[in-house]
Image (cartoon, rainbow, N blue to C red; front, side, top):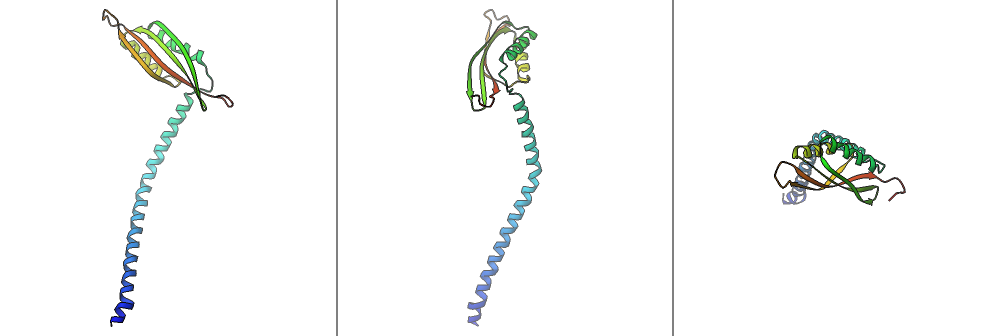
Length: 163
């Protein structure tokens, strides 16, 4: 009888235990797979959303420099919002792999509502503009007029063979 226990029963118990453990591991893997498959539609939706955003982003970075057109658009926006003492000055141009940028300094005067509306419209424009620095200073007699100084950066894509 002891030979049966040592030679047959104990090895079979080890195999049964190993099979049960493998079965438990497989069930866990299946449960994880089911859980991940439920998340797949959400991930697909997020991917499509990001692809749409990327398409919009790339569309807002023109392939041409077109600084004159941009400066004219800024001047028109300032005029539409009755901002006075306008100064718009392009600065240095920086180049990187496939993407170039131009710093633009802007100054003007107006009330806060006019200036914030100008920024809102600038943000909604069809060209990517990054505002790096904004300085707002009240007039000395506190009459509601504000002087605005802004350093912005506009982007354009480099053509093939261009820096």
